[in-house]
Amino acid sequence: MNSTSSSAACSKRALTSRNSAHCPKKTRHEDRGGMDRHELDDKSVLAKYVTILAAFGSDGQGIGLSEITRRTGLSKATVHRMLRDLVAARWLATSPAGYHLGRGLFELGMRAAEERSLIEVAIPFMQDLYARTQEIVHLGLLDADEVVYVSKIGGHRQASAPSRIGGRMPLHCTAIGKALLAHAGPGTIARVLARPLVRRTPRTVTGPGLLRAQLDRVVEEGVAFEHEESTMGLVCVAAPILDFDDGPVAAISVTGPSTRFRPEAHVVAVRAAAAGTASILARRRRIAPGDTRPVRGA
Image (cartoon, rainbow, N blue to C red; front, side):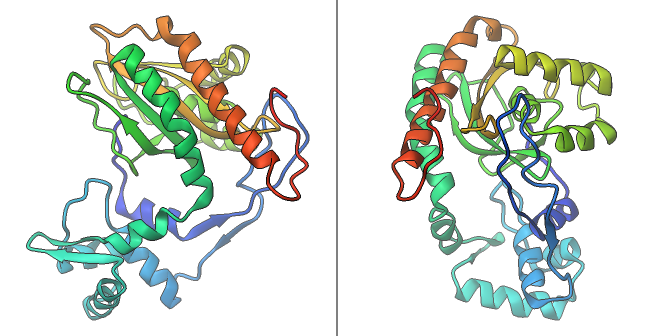
């Protein structure tokens, strides 16, 4: 549930866009992202602006000019000039602590219709899960072979989980990541399994064969589990939100301390929340003009 990642990795991800393609229904969805990949020219002006924005983490802390220069590798004069432009556009703001992401960028991001619709639909189901468990409920997306947390609900007695909205985690060590990866398609699975699986705790699964077996069970059972694999003391259960051809739209999870939370006891509720979200999203898309895709559960 940690959301740390290097600035260089963030910049590289930010310079990559992926085109998606539909495919026939199957047990595991074929890759939506690895086939047609276009990367920005890192010498272009746009790429430099994107690199600066990608230097900011999800912790909301201000960053000074020197630190942004260090993280981006751009010249100080270039960074200073571009920071002024970004502040003028309200994409960045300034404070005594330095520069931070601005309200203009937030407003622009909230215009992303697909993600906004997903959050609007998922929130009531997430609230139901929180009312049932009194533990942290997450909504996450698959992006660049990682989980991106886009919504989080927690109360006063929630476990100390370092996850943040906008934060990222590897797929292999979180329940929400496994739920997404299991349905991501053979290309994504092969790519993740081919790389070293970083050990974040003594319980992190680092064997490709064992992880693949876990992914097979996720497809069969409709839920994924984590037992202190990303953060010691935390356990989790997650279920994928699937689209019309079983591709992973997102995933919902419930996270709690290992001392009191039993993820196996909430399998039915988490699976129902994911299925309910998927059903409403499908119906919304079905009534859109010109959309003839089948509705899940109809």
